[in-house]
View 1 (spheres, rainbow, N blue to C red):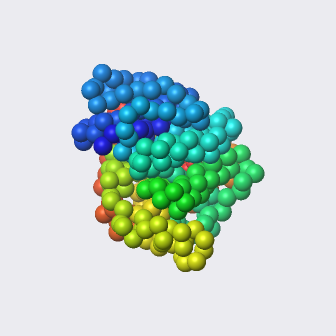
View 2: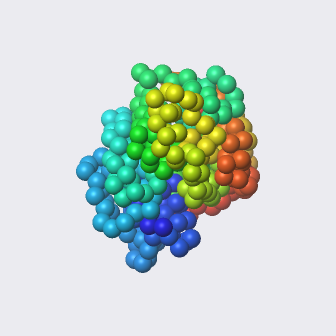
View 3: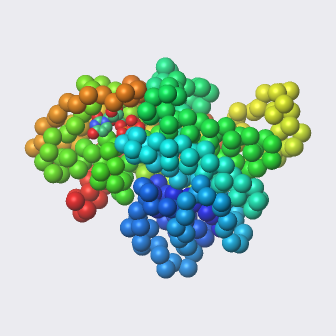
Length: 334
Ligand code: UDP
């Protein structure tokens, strides 16, 4: 396949570029380096199956040659980033998704949207499965990311039903691993860097809020499975799509075009993560409690029944092993 990855120099995007090039595909990486970094893809430059285009996906999009897939991964993705870049976050999720969909349609390519567990907001059910509509405050500071991604899902489904575009949507839960930015503000990178620098670990609130952390290699394997799982002909049938679009029948939410949760179902509290990081890094740091950010979700855990069924995927790296690998990475760069 020849695949365009927007946000290809970001944390997830760069791992995805590497995985697809490694599997023999040709990758066109597009990034405007707002939160992506040249060093994430430096080792791929010069590879015959890798091209880099420095570009903002919100501008008119043109890519030479054929494309078999367009994967839209561009977006600020840590709460700190999207609070600093609220309008860019809304634009890349809305306008950027629209442009990337248009390009996929023009090239008759498969489209893949990197969506998020944030579409569930501060969930009132735990774990979250894909049928849950979420509990999002559109006016809150973090609503910019949640609503941008919710719009992204809506327009992706509309392109699927209206244009018959072959689409995939992954709802990505908390992921960690090498190439997270030292200062990106997310909990795992913050804690490891703080522990290695012998500074106090900043636990927001009382640390009882939960998250479920997936190691990046597991996640990328899930993304590639979802991308490469074929669509069934019934799901792409024009009459079926028209019937669903006009509300004459329910869509079959079991088919591959509906969102799929990707994440590790092991749920831990933030305080547990802090203690685990202290143990793994053997750090003398203590814990410093800080105020909980507005609308910080209290719980988050993926139900991955659907991923197991439709793409035969589940994570295999355990949290401790993943944290050790991430620690090795941060030790080298700080
Ligand atoms: N958090 C924390 N200390 C930090 C950074 C984050 O306690 O230094 C908490 C944050 O309030 C949230 C959880 O860790 O409850 C995960 O935050 P993150 O920014 O990684 O991503 P989120 O899951 O909120 O999108």
